[in-house]
Image 1: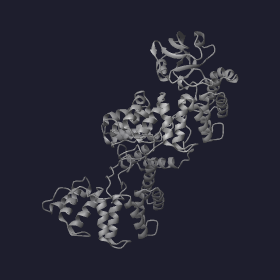
Image 2: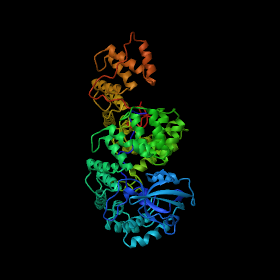
Image 3: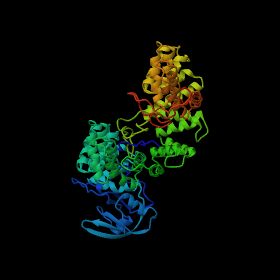
Image 4: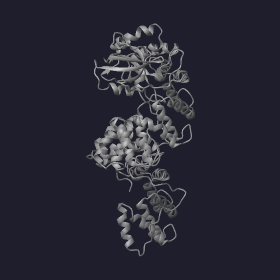
Length: 620
């Protein structure tokens, strides 16, 4: 696996979660017969919020067992059957295997007193039951009831009535409920029942954030980071995420960690990143688990350990996080931290690809192109390549993307170190375009191939520029044009693409479309050889041995021939045969120092090179 795996997300800006937008997250079979929310999200009229995450009773359903047992609005749930339940997840876990009618003992905080209640559990209330119970309270001006009623009209899976959701969020916001103000901001941000207005969304987020509502602080941070409704300001985003994280906001903790890892809005500090990330990961947050995996894979803030990294990736992948599923595919493909298994790699890539992860779609396509872990199938490869391209061309919905009921991910670049050094959306699209072009060329549809190569070249793809040079040099579709061929070849070579550098050297050696210049030939061969291109190393060796474009230097020539012979490439056997003709070869030469020297790209890695360059036979 690369030295540093791609961190998802650079900044996972939390918009209200499904639990915050609906009456609650998917409930267990049995409930307490009341509507609960995090105490930290509860803001009485004109008041602040309580910085804890225990569950507070917002509404006891009339005629429910909870009402008969004496559960009251405002009670804070402390324990169920003597077991502490400090969070909503802990409460759900305690009730997970219970059925309606089972009797439990709960301890609740009521004012300064602790009250023990025995109550039979009830079936999960329907949306209609909640609306019927909340309506009279909301009509009477109860701000919290207005907020909960709004959530009944807008849920995580569907929109029952966005106009009604907006109406009751506005009513709650005007009555001073911070959660209602945050909900109204979401309405404006995404145009739910009202015209979209990011600046108005920011205004309402800020009102709630300044009163301490952590989800509003997370939303305001997201807007500040991407510049939605306000100037982009990473420092301001970090400040608000830090406030949310300090209140136990899990996604705030994740975002703060990512800021520290990336050095966005604050100084880079991997140790501080792990401080915030570890509790979120150990609490089961899939994003945090994935990011812990990337930290262990790269030794960023923790000792490098690929096996531990794979364990974290698996935890997140099994929760359905697409980028973590992709990471598991990469682990199985490379054998880092787990057993190398191409079939397992393909299975994980497919899961992630079906969930829309562009990296997984690109890599799954490579497996179908090469027959690695699956039967070779150009049709399946083309399907996944088109999925990569179509995803990129689909219309978005502004700087915060399409509306989602749960987490929203703002993707950053600086976290993708090493081989995975940038979010590969643009790279994978470029690669998909020229790979589709190769498939078209295989079908002898050269016009379509040229169109796709041009599209990829417009995105700055060196591979596509190299292929365009081939098109102009051969004259499949366009009239043969040596000047255009040299132009595209030079573009690709200047980006450091070895096959283009080696081919350009040959162009200068032959004087095809340019003035013959053996010195320039040697210069481009040297650049390609430094990037570990064995064919260029062999050709450069002969230049030194024969004095072509450079002074005769037998040691340098034999050294480059040794370097090529040590490689695992078709040129290695040729170089070895030549070495047998030369006596006393010195040790292989390392790449010569030079201002243009860069670390060689990894073969097949998903950052700089989604596939091994020249997969379709055009690189040689």
